Image 1 (spheres, one colour):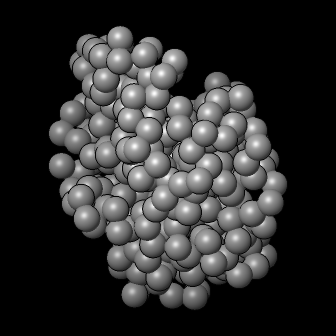
Image 2: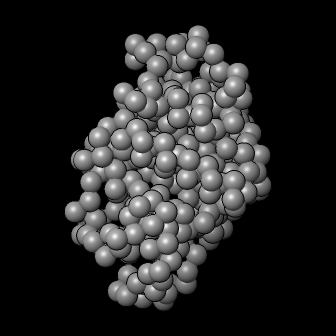
Image 3: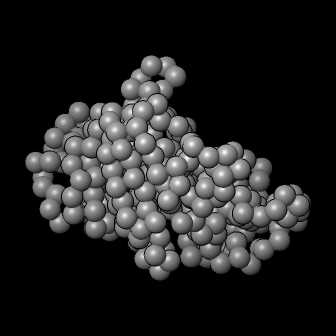
Length: 269
């Protein structure tokens, strides 16, 4: 099961219209990249897909369910099946890495198990396995406030990998990583989606990463979909129009931040 949006619109509390009548269908197992300038609406769209934001217009179907028509318990169960990698991971600074990763299963575990894991990690080897895939296995018991921005992003990715969601979402997951590490991380996201046959949607600032790793690319501009097509068919003119306000098309070699400092606070778009 994938998802579908029909005529979805959303206005933030400050009056800013973030999404305008978005129609989008993604089948189960598809891998899709969202590209577009800052403020285009990519983060808002991902938060709608994560059932974290309720649109004020249109219809949303996620994994065969309509998130806003059922009970609160049904909504919690749906959210437990969706994993979102945040650009600025909401991880408590004093939390240990192992606890941050195991938090990926909190929505699936009974309350007693969730509380017990906060005090004594119940599956440290499971957490270590996912961290090792991201070259962070030796950081298992380190405090998160001792990690760089890029390392925190990889911890957040390890948490979602441990969660094993049916819908995998990533919001600028490599914005604090150097180009080589960005390439490896985006490749791992795609490998995970292919291996498990789950749907993957990722917003990426570096267009070349999107074109290399994703079969389908969606350009988002001013809260609307400017284009939606196979990566092989995306043309330079379309990208120039998409990034006209930024004065150029961003690429991984020049756009990625160094993996040495925490990323700036996430600004909702």
